[in-house]
Length: 562
DNA sequence: GAGTTTGAAACT
DNA sequence: CAGTTTCAAACTC
Image (cartoon, rainbow, N blue to C red; front, side):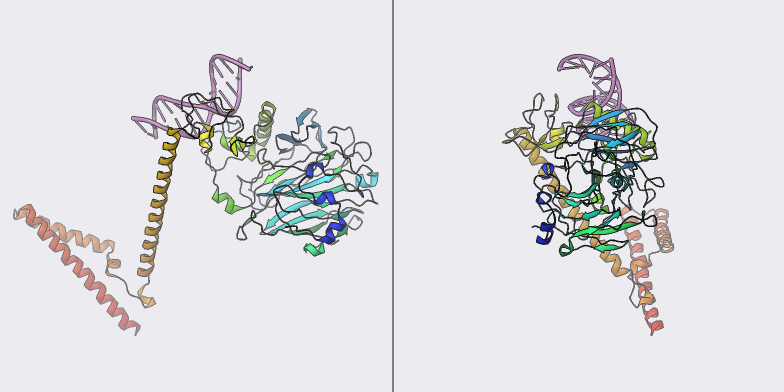
């Protein structure tokens, strides 16, 4: 379903609508852009910068963004970006390569990124990107082009864009489908301001949106989509945000309406650098006042793992912050706690770290995989990526044509397990070994009788577990029901069953009676059978007394209530 | 729960 | 790249 209105189509360049070829999308004609990969290095000065990441309530283990007073690490695909404030004095130059574009990001003191700044929420992804204009002017350079998604509420995404002098913003929603769509804000051609775009991916439907100038919140509807002119920046309003609410419609892949969504992240790309010669460099850093804003204590990490299937590449590479937003999703996919003892959870031995997540409720010792040790964590991430640029990519990917849909990206190397135990990463992922596996004595292939037997056993076990679970649920339900029916107290007009009178005192008295009978039987040297009989008989008397008392109490109560 | 086995990750 | 060591999870008892 195309969620973009014809009206919008006429307003925006066709390529924006092409969600199938987002990487090759040329720039708007009104906004001259480079149509070649952007050089990632530039000596252009940094004008200003701001990266602002916050989370309202995202579960710690799912929100992946790390920011500190000194740096922010963002990774896209296998790329690691370390973003430092403009005033950072570090001279340690680092380079990372964007596997998607093949370009290199260099850092030296100040991180310069010829990339858009992007982030995502849950399975849908939002990419905010700052796109440099080839003809950007000094005025444009000075003007910030910020935006940030503040949070998500149900089907709505609240996006804050800080107004920029003379900048026009067009918001366009993506087409549905599996490929990324584009939600773009573009700079005003006349003012030659840098472009600014917002991208959504994963085929999520977003209702076309538009915001009106001024500091207000607007729910944007498809028919409202239009070009918006942000008023000239004034000192008084320069920091005041213009807010948009992007309303997300539900599609087959969407979150359920009941999903309690928490957001997310706010990202802001404020400036770009060189206006003419190297307009593709963007500087990101943290704002002065805050890092994690909305919800203290909530962890935010930038995951090097959660990579989109495709990332916008408008002549520039893309930074993507993957953010998971749903508490419900968290509970539905709890991460197994790690038990690392020696790795400080900063090596790929640690599953949490390997999945780009913070340790949370783990059993690890000396854990550094947390916000308190973000410097070390960032360094460790970089080390891993230096060693293997695909270290954080999912190991289970799509196989070659003609092969299974899913296969291990590297293949396993099992020698003794026959690839039929969870030691084997293929088996653990419930996929069969493939031609790239180097395993010895593999039994994890389609026709393997051992594998079939194991599968049958596993299926049977699963059925058994399901049955047991169902039985437990039913029993629990029955108990609850029984308790509910016996809970009503006298004052409510209901009656108590006799056993509710079996208090501690009554039990003690009953036991004393039974013991007394036992003593008598022993003293009179009665046979054991006779002793048991009198004890049971006494027990019956006790029960009758309890029942009788209960009935009497009920009667008394009824008369009182009358 | 302790000890063993296993194979990926890390190291040389 | 190959061999070795380290590590944490899987497994066994």
